[in-house]
Image (cartoon, rainbow, N blue to C red; front, side, top):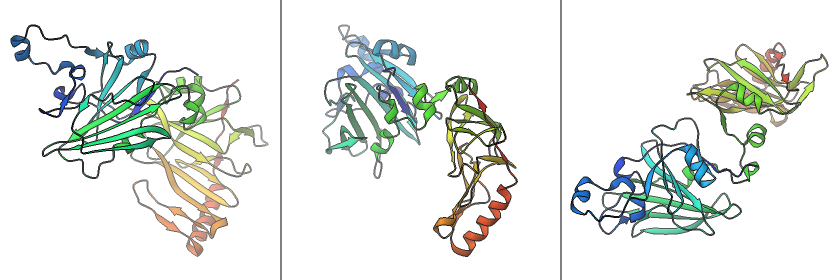
Length: 360
């Protein structure tokens, strides 16, 4: 497994004044090594002996070459900016999400240490865990600024990470939730990959459907489908193919990929439990309806594969149904659930099994 660290960030960029580390005021300041480009022309004019700035702009590719690791972005990221401090061997990526600005960092290390560049008289500090790794959360509550930091250490790979953000008010905000959305590959990708394709390819997104297909292995397969709610075809891939008796290769467990903003990544899953009823397609929907369970899928406004219906006859016909992707849907059970289940079973019987092209 390639020991490249992929940091998946669903976020974007700090303003120039806080681009390289946390913002600061007097007693609560960033360290010199973290100031990066915050040196002003006034300072340059008044102090000709000023120490050279150790930070410089970088790129995703260069960070990978210098650090032997790199940041990895998912869809939704924009205005992303990379930088590096070669003296201290720290890589950095700045980004935004939901109106908040973040900075993520990493470096090789032998223990948990704060590399965030945020020097505050912390209001609270708490030891915790992030995905089973030693971590620490810090919060500063000022009169007009709040700062949150979380750092964590991956002992097997000997890397320490940090994530920080600041805003006038962070009441109710949980930086841990954002940190948990970051995925890193430190040679332990199988612990974090969400499906077989991510695990065997070492990738979380692809440049095209063709690239995703090229990462499939012998015996695995792919198919395309036009699904309601998505403009274009989605790609279905599976590592659990079988002949349904008619010479067609089908599956009951698939991963759906979609293309969004020029990036191909996972849209969701479609799963069944009965090989006599493989995944089928019809009327812009994916169907998996067996004797005891019935699931129907379409796409929502976020281009994610979601349930239109999911009902189990084994549990008093308990389930869920919505007519349109934008609907909240309703829970079903008993007679109402049975009525919907039987209706879906009849409709599902007319859908055609999805036929997969097998990789040789």
